[in-house]
Image 1 (cartoon, one colour):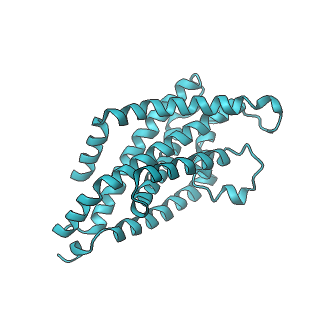
Image 2: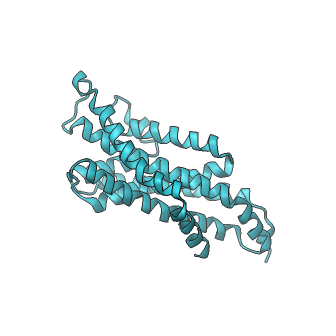
Image 3: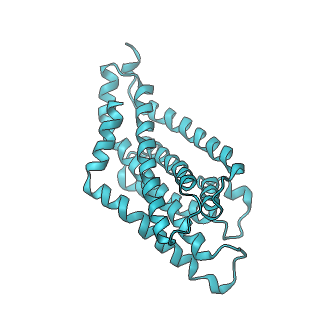
Length: 242
């Protein structure tokens, strides 16, 4: 818990991180809304929900996942040396991995709350359920936060890792929006497919998209197991013997 508090405190005290947290959701929501809404007149899409509205929800999903992913990546990179020393000092690798995941969960929740507030303001209060929206965004945030830790473990480079995360979040969010004629079998393999549907239903109807909850949590569990394995393997083994 000491490690989690220290990482969250460091996160909240960094001016650049706070600026990114406050600005990225608003900018992403507006840009996605304008971009998707701008092609409404072409008649390419068949949906009862206004395209600009779907665009803003997609922007909220993207900003949450990308921001949480980048924070997870930089957290992983910043503590690798310290964690390696802690393992040698006697801490167990799984204990340190659990601390990383706990920190990701806390930061993902902060990002989800801020993004929900930004979305509420951007769509002029037409948000049916803020609580369910936060929950859906939290799932997307923690998923990409964990992916950030995974990428930091297998590709320990800040620039390359950030580009991979942002590109994956962007493509996944756009495809998951359902606006393009791509087969469901493909879209459901993308990380943001189920969280996007959860958030969209929460915003529009204020209800829980129950059919998407278990697949989203299952996807998250698989990513956590893969990331935990990669993170533990990246640490020395000296702390396993106490």
